[in-house]
Image (cartoon, rainbow, N blue to C red; front, side, top):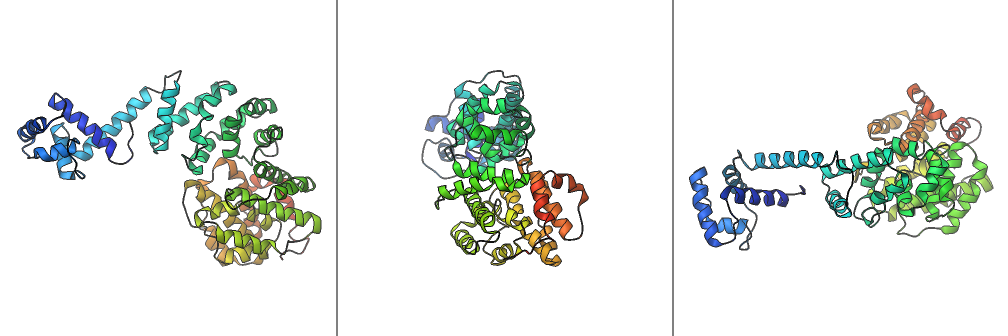
Length: 430
């Protein structure tokens, strides 16, 4: 049963009318008799031709709300709105009574649930989260593939934001169940399930030790998306402060290159790799990097700007290259206020925080405060939360008002501490 739009409710109303009428509505005569019955029960007239259109016996347009109110009253409801509320309520309780004690799911039942998820049935989405919670906390890792190795997750039926929502809701479960190298290797035996978890739960909190570090080690045995794998290795070494280990991965990213159809977050990792190669080889800023980034930004649809900036801009800002970041942001080419998806509100804050780092370094506190007011900390999902908090703490220190509640997150990342700690020891900007 789906509840997106109007049609599903109308199907339910047709069924309710036929139950009340005592038989199916299939002919003109049935509609004429129903017209009489409706008038007897409600005192309102609905012509049999309107009823023929409503039941699909003849072509016609949408049924007016006033008619739907009369039809709902015939079935015992105050109006159509009350009917819809009752149908939704019944569906909610029916779904959950059929779910909480369900031990096994057939492929047909699973696919029916996925079909509802694809149509943004929020009840179905909550049921799926409940199922995943039980599976990831109680079932063998080998059984996860039944739910995660499916075309639903890979063939573009869902937006990335929905997939990120599912995986990040289970952040604690993934971190615990996949906290060992053996567990990650076991999940890695099913490539699709492994990709589902690791690509949509790219967890920076455990990128040095724990789940994400183990996942990257397992991934090294079969690198399917080089820009993802090597990009994550760059972040791992950057955040750990082991910058000398970045160069092989940065060179591997550049060897892969990117194409215009590459997903923007991977392009962001490509630009980060370019930064590191030049920085580690020459100790400065690649003079072509700003121009090339702005060109790519101009060619990228604005709903994806948050992805293009999230891996690149915070790193170069923390490393002290304020002038390029300010130039990029002040061209007004990057649109941070586009909220195309739920996760965009989070990802855009990474670029905003990069700008804030640069503004704080430059002493531009009025503009710093205007951007600080636009942050969405309550939306920061778990995969990136501690990283966002750490950058935010760095911003606050440079702005002269340390947010001490975020200190723990900051010191969780030695590389970020190293980057911001060198701020007064070397000239910055380019």
